[in-house]
Image 1: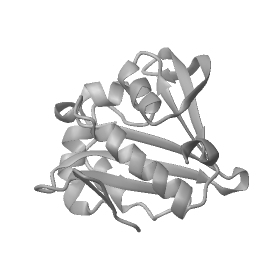
Image 2 (image 1 turned 45 degrees about the vertical axis):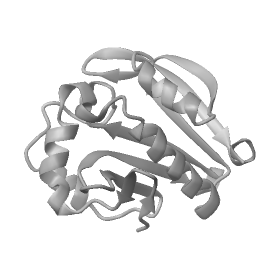
Image 3 (image 1 turned 120 degrees about the vertical axis):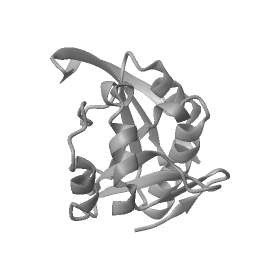
Image 4 (image 1 turned 30 degrees about the vertical axis):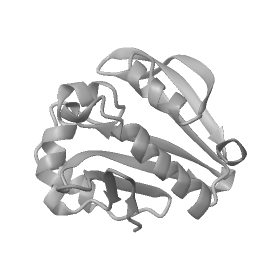
Length: 173
């Protein structure tokens, strides 16, 4: 898998050595609250199982680490749908690294990778409406608001409104 570099970040494949940090960081209630698939509490061994699962060529996941020191600050991935020439971007950032621009910086590079190297035509993302910070990331990336999906998901028994954003390769250039 590819490694991507930005001014402050290194986006690389996860290794089993990352499992304790994933367990601790992704397992924070604040992170799990705003992601569909991250459980809370985070089960023992789940990080190792997630990192070890066989790679899927249509699912590219990067560990977001600081270039200076290599500290894990989050994860970002693309789920590629080749049949429709599109990909969904998703991410989480550790609570102690919120509000530093890491999500925007990493997503900008992952979008470049999707458009230029994977030759995808469209990248989209969804966020829980209560998570306005995620919406700001998408706006900074030049994504357009494409709709609101009322009570679209259920997380911990709560019906969640979702906001949908997208960008085309022609818009990105």
